[in-house]
Amino acid sequence: SAALTIFRNIHGSNHISVKNSLFNIAVCLNSLGSPGKARNYLDRAYDIALNDRENVTSTSEILFHKGISLKIEKDYKAAKKHFDEALQIKLSNDYHGSPSAAEIYEIIADSETEINPSDSETPERNYTECLRLYTHLNDHKKSACVHNKIALLHMKQNSYSKAIIHFEKCLLMNKILLVEEKMVIAELYINLGVAHDHVHSFSKAISCLDLSIGCNIPMISSKALICKGRSLSKATQYREALECFSEVLEKH
Image (cartoon, rainbow, N blue to C red; front, side):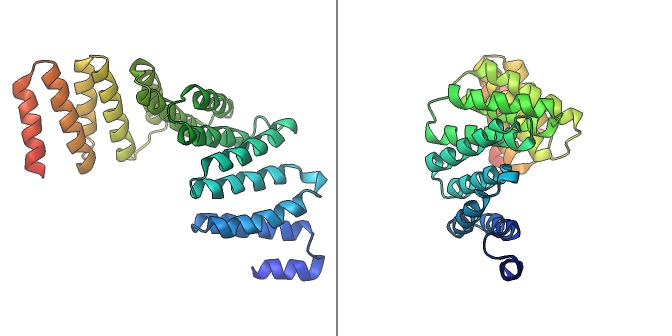
C-alpha cells in the first residue's frame, strides 16, 4: 500500500507501476481470504492494463486472479468466464506453451467439475490439454497432479478401468520424482485399490491397500483397512476380512 501511494505520487494514477502494485495487493488479499477486496484492486489494475499495449499478457493475469477470487467465493460460473477470457488472451498472443496457459486450462477444468458434476467429458478435455502442455514443459509434478484429477473424475463416473490407468501414471511420476509425502502416496494407493476392487481385481486391490496401510498415516490406514476388509470379503476370504475390521475397531 505504501509503494502504491509513492508510485501514484511520482507517476500518476495510470502508470504501469501503479497497476503492478494494485495487482500485487490483490494477489495477497486473495491469499488472505479477502476475495471481494482483491477484486476491487484487480478492477482498477485492469483499467490501467487495457492501455498497456506492450504487455497484453498482464490483462490475462489480472483476469485469471479475478477468476481465483470468484472461485474462492464458490461462484464457479463467473470464475470460469474470467478463466476462459484469460486463456483466449494467452492463446491469441502466442502464449500457448506457457505455464500460465496450462494452469488456466487446469483451473477451467476444476471449475467445470464444480459447475456440472455429471459432465466428465468437458473437464477431461481441458485436463488433457493442460496435461499436454505440462508434458511439453517437462513439468512432471503438475502432470502427476492432473493425472490424479482425471482419475478421480473417472471414479465419479464409475469408469474404473480408465481411473486405474491415470492413478498408475500418477504413481509412476511420483516415484520418478521421489515424492516423499507419505499422505499423497497413501491416498493414491487407497484410490487405486478401490478402483481395482470395483473391477473385481481383488488381489491387486488388496496389494495396493496394503501399501497404503504401510505408509502409517492413521486416518488413511483405518480407511484402507476397511476397504481391504471389503475386498477380502468379496474374495471370500472372510477370516482375513474379519481381522481387518477388528483392527479398525481396536484403533478407535
